[in-house]
Length: 170
Image (cartoon, one colour):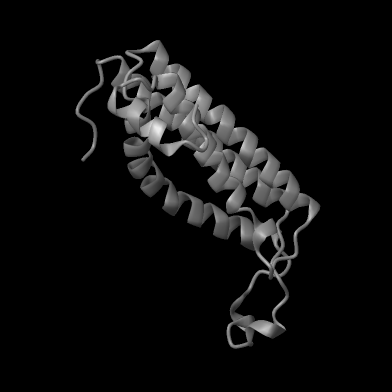
């Protein structure tokens, strides 16, 4: 696995010398880097808490386990085109999950957040609002959505890798 030498990696890719397992490792590494980079700890205006730290660790671990699980499902089938399948299938799955996540997030916010920005706060300047902090319910929601995402991804990859899947949604 090349972490610095782009030219050698390009030559190996051109010569088809990069295996599916190596491709999975590259995909896993860049995904974990993106997950870490998106962490709230890197936002200067955010009050990072223990709950945020726990959430970050859970998301990183769930991402690693989820990608590896999808890889093993692909490998148990035809063991081809893992990255292509992950990237392409992730688009419709993510689009389907966005409204679900928004609705569940709003419900969770209304039920479990004391400082939910209700209608009485809409006309206040941002400087007067209490910051919304993560809570254990937020972490649970993130875990549920991430587990569902990778379960659904693996289910579809399994269908594709077995060559018995239908045409699917367009």
